[in-house]
Picture 1 (cartoon, one colour):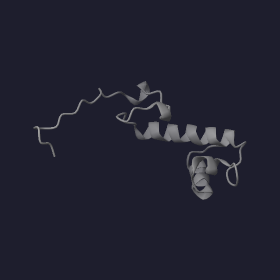
Picture 2 (tube, one colour):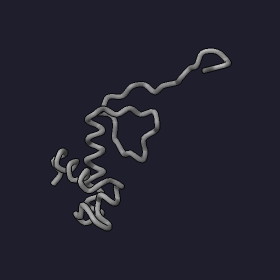
Picture 3 (cartoon, one colour):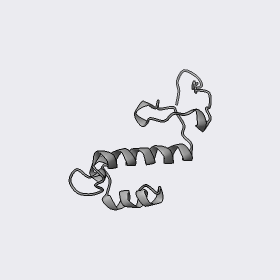
Length: 84
């Protein structure tokens, strides 16, 4: 609700998914990602976590711990995204 009249929003111009070079930490809050962009970011994040964990999925220092997710969830995401 606004006491000073109608609310106005300044939104950025839409960009195509091809023009987005996604780094999750660098995204402004107003950036919209396509489903493909989200899958790519998820794949890159999981791959980076696996590299950092030395390929270890679960347990202390594993990728699941680094990503703060259950190992079973991470395993199913790895399978769904066909990460080797």
